[in-house]
Image 1 (tube, rainbow over the protein chains, first blue to last red):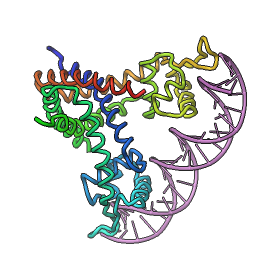
Image 2 (cartoon, helix red, strand yellow; image 1 turned 45 degrees about the vertical axis):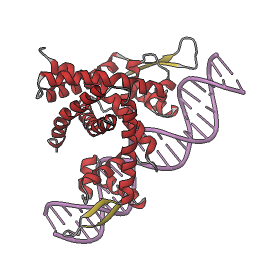
Image 3 (cartoon, rainbow over the protein chains, first blue to last red; image 1 turned 30 degrees about the vertical axis):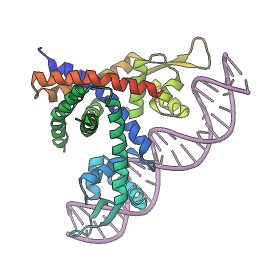
Image 4 (cartoon, chains in turn brown, orange, yellow, blue; image 1 turned 135 degrees about the vertical axis):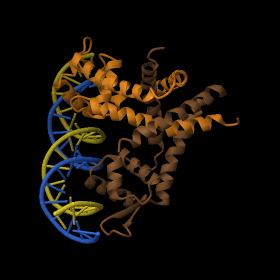
Length: 150
Length: 150
DNA sequence: TATTGTTATACTCTATAACTATA
DNA sequence: TATAGTTATAGAGTATAACAATA
């Protein structure tokens, strides 16, 4: 087994995008009022980092500052995000999800999760247990890869 | 174990998008001349289905016909796709990758594959073998889910 | 003077509507 | 009359440049 990492990465590359496609399709179907992908990612970021600044969100979603400013206009207008002056520094703004914002995110997540569960029912318990173990092996690797980029 | 499918789907939902993010980042880094995501997907579709019609590609990439027509203008201009009148029906066009088109796809795929392999080297052989088995269990499920949608 | 965010403007991508050519 | 694709036009979304306010 000289080069198992190569085989493993090929298998992943042939399978993961397929799964991701199914996840996205289900999330799209359920997101109540239409959300664009960057809007969705901005909400998800604010879920993980409440009271982030505009620059933080722009940086992590991958948009320029003016674009994120306009995107947030829309999310604030629709009541998914609250925007208020930061306490110590009046140049900055604190962004956070409203309860409506949390709800939108949860709806999409739960829909995708239930859809996946439905597909996984055709497997037997030991196969599902193996999947869980694999995910727990993979997650820390890619969490580390993600954070080391910033 | 009353509800293992639920746990399994949560684990997948918390891990797969992370991996996909790493794959996309690496593909973006390597795609020689800039390709948008829909352009990339159009090329990938033509790789799987040579001599597809414009409507086929539009349907599967998720664009309207005029948008795909313009997108193809760009790919033909840049030499990644050949476009010629279909044999039996002069209304239709046959689209296919040129060798340059194949090359662009392969470069992106190989870069992503090598990057993944690098990350997977920190695991031991038995863990990688388990990943391979898991991918082979999951792939047919999501291949079926994909095709049943059309 | 540097930093945070907004406004002004232009460009790209996509969609809908109208059109051409073939079946 | 229906189908495959193109052209015309308009609407989002994003970027760069210029600006305002605060540190």
